[in-house]
Image 1 (cartoon, rainbow, N blue to C red):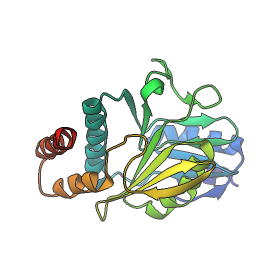
Image 2: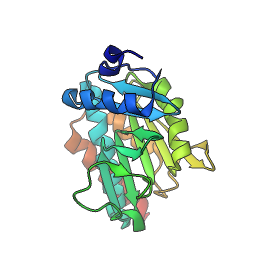
Image 3: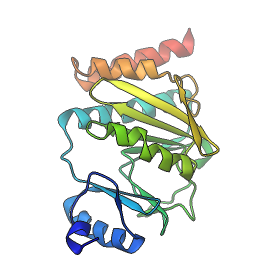
Length: 217
């Protein structure tokens, strides 16, 4: 791979050593891109984040955090944070959550989360506008291998959430979260659909009513 290739975003998986990957992300940091490394291949993402992507990103974070708060589930959410097994794997999911006893696992002041030292997140979420097939394919395999318990892909185009429970380096589709019991995908999908017509405060109020109704009925 040439020096030019290591400096340019790829938006696809290309063969690279870990050393070449480190060189590439050093350049990428200047451009605020996202980066992944898996099975001797790297992916650098530099496509501009769309309005719809950014909006769904906020709705999902709000919904998950609100649900956890109402249910008394300890939760720490992370936005586009780097998780790394040096020399082996690297990823920057759009959203990640540590839950319950893991909620305060990562100390303040941590930069890159070293997965040789700290546990993987319980929940990982990718917001997919242009990267849907990759999020459902190679990235899903990456998160399976890391040992993430649950993985969601938010299909921005169709206001759909494709969710997987993961175990033993495999995954199966689910319609209700297992790490956040009672949180149904159809409720989150309805929130995404409503966000197309409502502002986020109105969507938040609707989510609150749904979560409280489910709690007390």
